[in-house]
Image 1 (cartoon, one colour):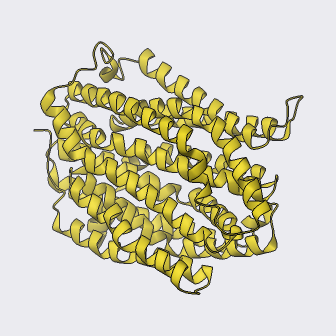
Image 2 (image 1 turned 180 degrees about the vertical axis):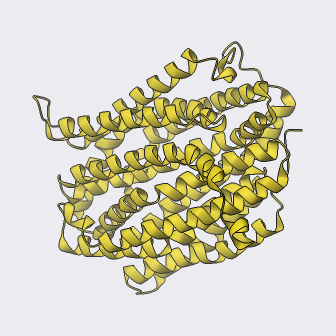
Length: 460
């Protein structure tokens, strides 16, 4: 009975892994290259590494704004596909295109007019020479990385829709090609190899932009050349008009997700700004720890995508009991796999920071932060899967309060108070941040899953 309730059969895991493994591979390789990229920039020194890390925090907010802007349409897209309604999938694709144009315009305006001011928010403590150098490197990196905004957004329009229809292999392949391009040109352009100029942080940004363009070209070209597999793309560009009721429903469900992703990512950026108050070395250490964390969290991130797609399709087909059973088993599998990866992360934590050309203090802090992250990662795996399960049923207002509202009303005020009004050392502060962020949410997430309020079909 216990095994049947919590553990799936071979057919279940075959279907789950067929969907999740390409996402794991793509995210894993992407984060591995991000790690190598981080190390390459780290060879230039602490200031270039910190400047790039600060800008990447800002880019992270933009990335999640894109995901949030598409999430509402994605809920409908997965359920439309499960219901066999390809016109509905096509309409959600068009909605994403329109939303993408709006987000691109907003992001370019902010980065080009206020980018320097945003970078300075993170440079509040340390020697003036170090701070100015980090600011200069950050501005150099930002001046090039803004060019990735268009191809990144367009590829997410296509990739998200392909995944909602069960097509995960092509996004994986395009991602692998992109990271190979990124890694190769990072080496060439950062250090000036094979006769190329040594562009430093500008070279790192240029390599990322080139990789995004290549990834976008592969995905878009494949989708249009294989219309028999991607019926949603047929006639998708004949018009960008949408059924009024569907657009209203997507906005109603999607607006909380858009606001949530923006506020949540802004909350992470704000948390890192709070950490920066404790010194310039903390900025570098947090950057290293978060980079390593991203390398090891690929499994539970992919399981979140998988549970959203699988459960969304089942809800769209009104197979409610199977949706509930699938969500439970995917969550258990995600936590179990994450326990294994977090143990590995815990064991190798002392060795990763040694690859960076930085001070002993930064390496020590980064190593301890990695260990703290590893210990709490299984809890994050549960929260991630719970969030996407609840969201798959269109309960977006609930996920908003569950995620970003809690972060800004509880987590950020607690962290701000600790760093500004107490003398608590940075490592206990880092631990308090994660405990406050994940502890209460885990209890609430479990209750929401248990109640089953997310189990509903929103496309009929």
